[in-house]
Image 1 (tube, chains in turn blue, purple):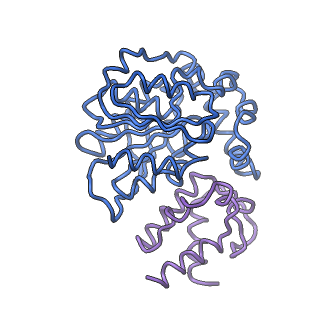
Image 2 (tube, rainbow over the protein chains, first blue to last red):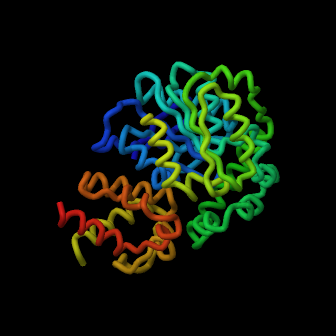
Image 3 (spheres, rainbow over the protein chains, first blue to last red):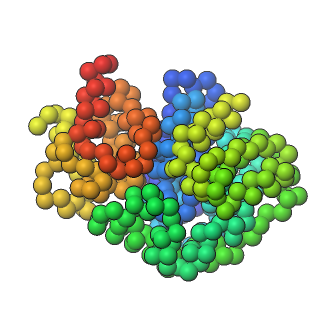
Length: 257
Length: 91
């Protein structure tokens, strides 16, 4: 297990690859979604496929997984500063940034604020603006029960079956929703204007779920970015878990590309 | 008890750490979901421990990435032990 201190926060970082097929050296950094998520959804999902060709760096966002549970800094701009610091600390030159959900917003903001760090972007279900996401309503109530009830059944079962696991999941949610600035930070999050998106002239792979409340964002971003392509998969918002094999193939093909 | 089961059992105890409250020994039939209640992030730590122990000959992460979430939850310790033994006997 590896830990790195970045921006005065202790981050849990894991690396995969490069595998035997590795030919290109540009690493990929992958950011996960909020609250019930952590780096495991990439680690056991799409990341091993991407890591066949290149080094992949995964990390737990602040307050998530095994990273430090700090009370503040859950706005996308701070998240982007964390990611930029991680890229600086672990690689040289521009890298591929990939994110799911809130992690996609972090990757996008990182690319906008630190263009020299980014070779390409993979955005899976980026909810832009965050109010697009159906779950935002349950997050805004700060009630862990409502948030868990809004999750797809398979995911909820995985989180809440058993006494020890359910207790730990609830404790983590209680902290993030009630004791940290996360809810207020998210509520204050603004949209990114199309003319700002238009200035991001790197290849962008967009992946959206046909049944996700964020699905229309895919079309908007496809039109706004100068070099974007869009894949729509049969699924909802949680594609990194529900459609991990397809997401891995699409991202690996895109980065190879 | 096989050497592999002993090794995997020790790793699981280390991963769970202070939270350990299982009152029976880990066997081939112990399930990661119902008995151990391993969280996803603890599964990552277990995978890293296996990588450190067995190196590239046991691609636990690659093996798990072919499985759906509900299959992973239903895994038994014996499934992992058998996978490790299979990798090591064929390499």
